[in-house]
Structure formats: structure tokens, C-alpha cells
Image: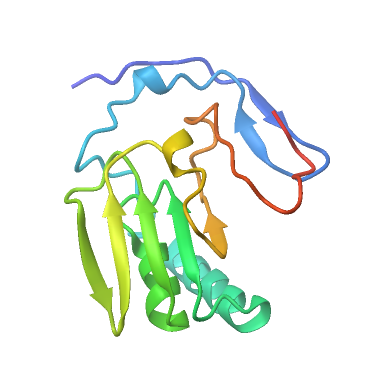
Amino acid sequence: MRAPLGEIVLAHCLSCGFTFNRCFDPGLVDFKPGYDASLVYSDTFRSFLEDVAGRLIGEFGVHGKNVVEIGCGKGFFLRLLCERGENDGVGIDLTVVEECVEFAGSRRIQWIRDFFGERYETLHADFVCCLSVFEGNRKFRLRSRSKSACER
């Protein structure tokens, strides 16, 4: 089984620290339900995500909020935020296996199989996270109160 190859040209934003592949071609990746690019099989990465979720909840007040994760994959991080922070969540990703609503305690998580696009720009969210899909979503845009230091 052979995977298509693409060009890699890494770029780094000095303002925000974001590093990305400037030549990423989403057409070379078959994003379909069940595609698994998850890193949570690594104990180290899973521990990192648990720490980040704990800090977001404890230090930054992501508790009792509406959380949206763009590119949620199988939803490990969004579930952490919702279960531990008593948050409601929406996960949007082309690889979502089943579009549904599930419950994390008394809170709900909605799973949407789609690319994040204009139809979701007005989705109500107190907190938005996106762990690793900027390269694949060149038209990524959110309405927010403050502008990012890094705009591509």
C-alpha cells in the first residue's frame, strides 16, 4: 500500500510560534470517516493533552462553557474538556465516525462530520480550540474579539 507524497516546506511565524508546512496539499490526504491521525496512543502525548486540558480548566476558566474543537478527530481532547470542565462541546472533523450527540455527565457533545467552514463561523463558542488542522484548512476564519498575531 502506497501513500501519495507531497512537498514539505516548513515555515515558522516569529509572532506566535506556529510552525506549518507551507506546501501542505489536503487533496493528498483521504479524510474520510474513520481516518485516524490520532496521537493519543502515545502515553506521552495523552499526558500532554490531559495537562493542557487541566490548565485550561483550572487556570483559564474553561469551565461551564461552550467549547468548539475544529479538527477534533476521534474527540479525545474535546471529551477531556467537557468531562473535566463540565463544558458542552461541538467537535467538527471530516473523520468523525458517526454524527451524533453524546453526553459527558450532564453536559452534551455534538459530533459533526464536516470541514470547518463559513456555515460554522457564527456557532456560539466561549472557547475554540484547534490542535493540528491549520494546514488543511487554508480558509480558516473565526470571528473573535481579538486578532491573532499570525495571519496567513
